[in-house]
Length: 564
Image 1 (cartoon, rainbow, N blue to C red):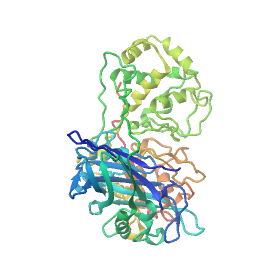
Image 2 (cartoon, one colour):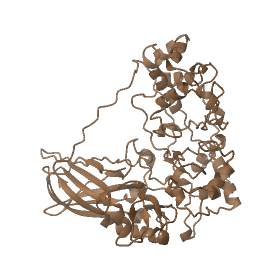
Image 3 (cartoon, rainbow, N blue to C red):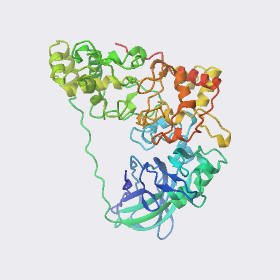
Image 4 (cartoon, rainbow, N blue to C red):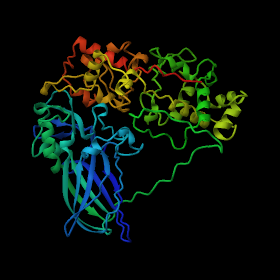
């Protein structure tokens, strides 16, 4: 995939008549050419061929140097740049118009911001962990720069690398000469060269220097990244014709009745704020209707199967069977996923084919292997049930039943299925204590395996980190015979949601742990955070593996029951 640039529209305004604005564009490159993500075509000075699958960083401390001297600081502003998603929009305010000669910023955050409570940031804020995926959650602080990918030496198979540059002393200042005149000039383009980050002035060899870093004090890989970072940026051009970014129209709620009861969404203070659908604001009336529809067998052709049939409340709204069985007796090919804490996800099903919960809710109804019904028939059947007319009227301001309203109501019910009161959560709040075995499992879970530093861990947190115990990405986890990427599920209530994996191939958590310990199959799509491990596996002892299972069982929320 060819990236044309990561654009941050930086609006610089002053209180007077001479308000100025500047579009700052950071282009991910290698050797001056646009970075091609996930393409093993680049070479470092050690001759290793490599790809970049992730290039993501947090930028703060913006300032502009005036021609006559002195810096105009913009305190408190943070941007997130990401090569794959091209996210990162910030507003820099109260900058006077005039002539400037340099731009300055930092890769990383100041200590106070780095240690701030991540739960305070709004859903679209660049420091919301659910937006950037760069927070270390229970360890505290953010990853300043994530560089991940795959590499090979000669004709050897591909393996992975994961460099996570972080910790307060590693905040790195970047100063670039750039002559521009505000408001005449409107944009500055900056190249961020991933190749230079690896090659100079301290070249890095994945095979010799290491395939991972968590920037522990004295780690030579982190030291090399800090030295190389300033030289990886350069100003490409100053322009007066870069595109402007128009404000989007405010989202209007769909079918909101004149009278409604706001639903109080429940979440842990440890959770990042979710981006709840603004066109479908939560109301008690819609949640009540969605609950009723979720459990109604009339959504199936034979009036025998409801959504709850394959998403059992007693199993954290997952299916305890390996594959669900449809109305025709047909057996599916995927294990039904748990429906917990989905307010933080943006794509649904194992393969992410549904862009919203409302879309996802209607797909099983029409699937011939599952409920095998048409939406037209569902509407007709529900219209014949007297109790639904007042429920739809209360929820949408009119008794008319439509597929869209069915999807909106079920979406609301599923959004309310949150879980955050496990023994682990209570231990984090100081209300209980984990057992020594559970604590050992937690330490293994959160510890990266770095044999070159004599450090061994289970390294689970890269994919299952954060308060939600998932990064909600789609990755290949090395299942034998599987090359596709599937959703990373949350591990909350995982002791209730077996069997495991997209195809339910593992019956127990012990089998899951053993897969990651010694059963990962290498291939071209294997996630770099797994591919970086030795081919022989993690080498966890039986006691360590048992401790991991004990910790995972401590993530069960006994209060996870729907009150009707």
